[in-house]
Amino acid sequence: MKRTQIRQSVGAIMAIAAVMAGAAIDESRAAQSMAPATQQAVPLGLEDPAGYIPADNPQTAQKIELGRLLFFDKRLSKNNTIACASCHLPSMAFTDGQPVSTGIKKLKGGRSAPASINRVYSKGQFWDGRAETLEDQSIGPFVSPVEHGFINHDEMVAKMRTIAGYRKLFQEVFGRDIVIEDVGKAIASFQRTIVSGNSAVDRFDVGGEEKALSASAQRGLELFRGKARCTRCHSGFNFSDEKFHNLGIGWDTNTVDLGRYLVTKNPEDIGAFKTPTLREIARTAPYMHDGRFKNLEDVVNFYNQGGIQNPHKDNTLIPLEMNEQEQADLVAFLKSLNGEGWQQIKAPTSFPK
Ligand code: HEC
Ligand code: HEC
Image (cartoon, rainbow, N blue to C red; front, side, top):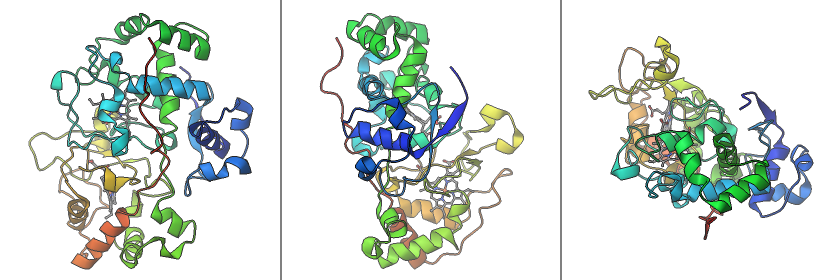
């Protein structure tokens, strides 16, 4: 697979939105700037930023639909019990509400399932960024012993090739028999349509709708950008700097997850995890890579104390000395980040036979 990613114009996201609205698109349109006819389909707050779409995997309506089938199909697991959607539930903003996920044979992994929304705006995927593209990410879980449970990708592809309906669809979309690269491309294309914008914060901040945020949430926005120092990491329209930081999560237990260090072997990355987006955050409890915090009040209290001490802690984190009202205001702000752009995505009613 070609690794180079291009920053595709906003037109690509527009095209995604058009596909979500059921419209057929052609590739040339996808590269153009936003057309007035589909402008409303791009959620407020996401219009300007570009997304990462590899040059060799353009969004097409048929490929996205194939990706949707694959994302929800439990036959893509060793014993027909697990689909991507088992841990990334549409009803829960594409996470599972559990501290850590449960996969095949009720086995548990060591990390919490992130809300897999706005993935089109990130390069590195997973808490430790170990997948460099969404295409790579999209085939990882199939061979995880605690997720879909296949020994290797060949085993899964062999199983898929027994389903005539999939062979036909892959021929139509990719012009060849099923190979794992194309499974990754289709699922990645589908995942790029799962977006969230037009939250109350966007309507207030971008849309100029003064009543969109309560007085408390408005004060919370000021704190988020000021005294609470949150935007030092949760920056930009997707509330992430896409970098890795050590907050000390896990250093108060005897099972520290070394995070990004396991990927880079760089001592500076010990215990560092990717800054997650905060969009939809009120819907995606529990929080942090180990799912330790049940609610946003606990998260804010954690930051107020300056994180958990350890030799590798990010020095941006310091005690914030926010009083109770300020902490409540910050929580009110975080609760205003629920948006739309993903709710229309539903499980397929039938699968290829
Ligand atoms: C058994 C539960 C489970 C299954 C099944 C599963 N995931 Fe995940 N997913 C997780 C967990 C846990 C993580 C975090 C793992 C990590 O970061 O190391 C994750 C991470 C991700 C991420 C990264 C999000 C981010 O913000 O970096 C994406 C995207 C994703 N999964 C999509 C998928 C797709 C596509 C499938 C199917 C091919 C799938 N998942 C199957 C539990 C699951
Ligand atoms: C030094 C960078 C940094 C700063 C400053 C920071 N965060 Fe974070 N945030 C992160 C990282 C990294 C994680 C994931 C850490 C982990 O799981 O180990 C995270 C996780 C979170 C989560 C949980 C997300 C989820 O999906 O589980 C919330 C909520 C959050 N931060 C809110 C805030 C707020 C509010 C502030 C300001 C008080 C703030 N953050 C300041 C980097 C930062």
